[in-house]
Image (tube, rainbow, N blue to C red; front, side, top):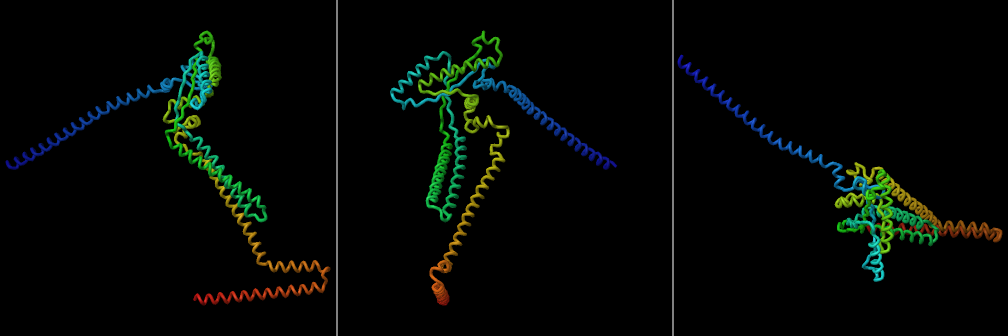
Length: 409
């Protein structure tokens, strides 16, 4: 009994020790999980603070702040509107001649004209020089359109020349005229093709730059306080436009004396001027014409319109089919004429005999019945002899061919 009791006690002690060990393990696991959760929360807190800071930064950069950065409100009526409609700017684009290539008298005239320009200034101006990358994409597009038209003209001239050349009984002058037209259109097409290829090679050179010179004239109606107090925004704008236009025209007239041509920029040209100033790198890739005419989808899809593609494909298909049919008709006419000519060549002896007999019948009254009959008999004898000669020739040809075949065998 004592042994069984001792055994039972030892078993209970073992079970208790195991349960205590399991409990300790569970406590350790829970502690590790709790530590990980605390560490995770500590990591998430700075990320939340960062997100909050980003939200605050995003809220700072709004539309108004962008307009403040650009330092102008809008472009309208050929003027740049600044400072909430209180100051207006009009710009003159200047294009001059090469001073270094001018003669001495021309240089003196230009210098005296420039002195006159400086002395005539009664208001402040700003001279602005803008350097742009030379973008010739529009020129290349126009060249390619004209090249396609020249290709159609050359193909048309080629077809007309083939038709004229293969038409029988046509004067030599017409053939020569069609040939000269074909050469003219072909030479123009090849020349235009070379021009387009050279222009595309020039476009790959990104170091081609051009400089544009501008004179900016600013005016604020608030400078005349007494006249502005009772004016609304439209009247202020009209007053600014009138004053700036008069100043620009006076400057343009004075600039002409020093061999410089001036032109007042319109609203689109002013927008391009500002766009290039704020987007120097993107201007070559995405020009002002695309910006003004683009929709949202054109920011992602820049390919040609699908309807234009289908129309161009149909036009090309019509051109190819028309050219093919024209060539077939020319070949058909040519084959029919050649066939008729060959038949006449093969039956020339028979036609001569028929024509001879017809002439004898027509002159029956003049030559008499007896002579007519004799002539017919002589004609029949000649015809019979010619038939016999042809038969003998055919027989000799047959025997020769048989001998040659035997020799070859």
